[in-house]
Image (tube, rainbow, N blue to C red; front, side, top):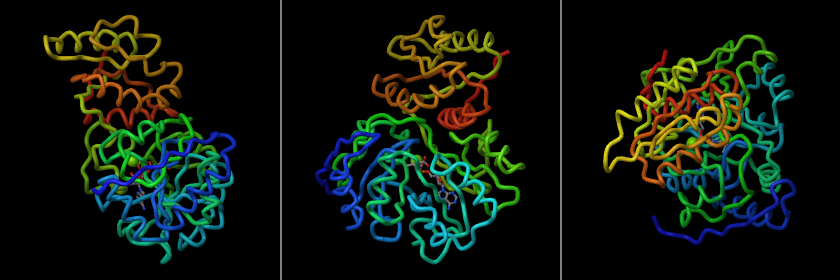
Length: 355
Ligand code: TXA
Ligand code: MG
């Protein structure tokens, strides 16, 4: 790819300087690419109504063309332009969870270019709550198509540095708004099924959704502990080996005492000269392990911290040349389900059950 100069605009994440945001908004309006922080991960944005601009996203990321992109809006009315039909349940969910980390799937309208939906009959829409994302989209005055701002196959970026590591020279502008709040991507909820179906677990939890709308299905792939056939991967992103560090990963699940024993056993079995073995541990357990690298990613009592640090730790393990990683599993409830979904996938469903 031909290299362009990536301009970095550093802003105050809570009260972003309007002058800088307007520079970025102009780039979007002219069909360019802008990476920006959201409350979940950094996104790589383009004008969602401009097919040529959207195709640049696929090129910059090396994204497979059959993987559709979420459209980000700052104004609720935009959904009536982008969606053919807005069910009643959507209004309830939007009232409760927008702006925020919940993406809703609707039957698409004619206004949405094919590149955005990868030819599917549906369109995914969300309204981010991050002040930078919100201000950028409303200043541009257009809906913004934005996948996570990483190269395809790399973990989603949770800092401006991660974005530059992957996309420097490939995009016009990066808005640096510091570190991210949640650290895992938004919950994707399909509203074209009855009851609605969670296709990707995220920061808006299944438990919270059920409190508001009653019955909610969780797609088998979202809670999968084994690889699932691509044929039933309703969300094309499901089938790609996402979120993966270069190292081989094993996840250990089960009761805590059992996990601690099993993790050390697996580490001991792998350690040999020339091989670097790491553990992704929690603050409660990290002191117990002997390995080449032990990373604290959060706490069993603090799954939000795990969500926030997970992708950063993946990148650190790669940078340190770790070849084999043993990761402790969390309880797959609340935000823990989002964490386990990413972790199991990164491990290629290589899961060991401890007793
Ligand atoms: O938190 C997030 O959602 C971040 C920030 C930037 O908003 N974005 C993000 O985008 O994670 P991306 O492209 O990395 O993941 C979007 C997921 C993919 O798994 C994709 O297949 C799915 O959403 N998706 C998008 N449009 C869809 C559609 N029309 N039908 C089914 N799945 C869709
Ligand atoms: Mg992504």
